[in-house]
Length: 272
Ligand SMILES: Nc1ncnc2c1ncn2[C@@H]1O[C@H](COP(=O)(O)OP(=O)(O)OP(=O)(O)O)[C@@H](O)[C@H]1O
Ligand SMILES: [Mg+2]
Image: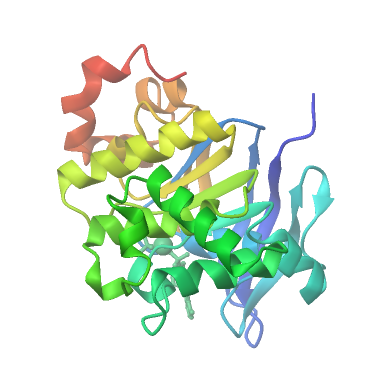
């Protein structure tokens, strides 16, 4: 078997002070070019697991055991410099809260320039050009004219597109999208999901979708991992999880997903 693109191996995350465990021995292997969904109810440990992958756990919370590997290389003991090089250019995160992740005091050109110039030697003019390309790629209309707009001047859906563009800016191999559509209404949700799916194909990325709603990833994910209370309940191909879930908890999640049944006929032959 080939080395997975991203491998979370027996990952345990908890409080440093008390040792209280929040994510307990989770293992997920993500193959190159695949789309994996990490699904579970609120508080199940999805975001913490992804923050551990990015080396961005909140203060006081750390990895207590296990490993995270990118193409076989452990990421847990990288120094700050190696981590800065990796984040953005190898793995990128579209964080759960787009508004909080954008700096409200910087316009788009400034936000993108910061990220682009941290990773690449670009002149201001080149960074500007690349920013326009990225914004066009994620469907921001009239991108060149929006460079001087601030985050609050965009709609929720547009901000999510901006976040995706920012995540894509340094050409990551792995894109982690943490609940990229939760705050959006249903039509916009679908547009964002389609956008990520299209970009994944065009840019040949490996994608990890984080969601509490199994219906959202039906037809988009090749594999699904189900988390509950910080533990992996089950994982398998999308067909296995959607059509033959082994665990009661997965069945409950499926039953609580009305969108899945609306989309059922379209998704069945379409799990890639
Ligand atoms: N900064 C923090 N300080 C203390 N506890 C935290 C912190 N972040 C997360 N936790 C706890 O860790 C557990 C997992 O949280 P996490 O954010 O990973 O859940 P999640 O699956 O992403 O949920 P949601 O669907 O609501 O985003 C929860 O019990 C949460 O309360
Ligand atoms: Mg979360």
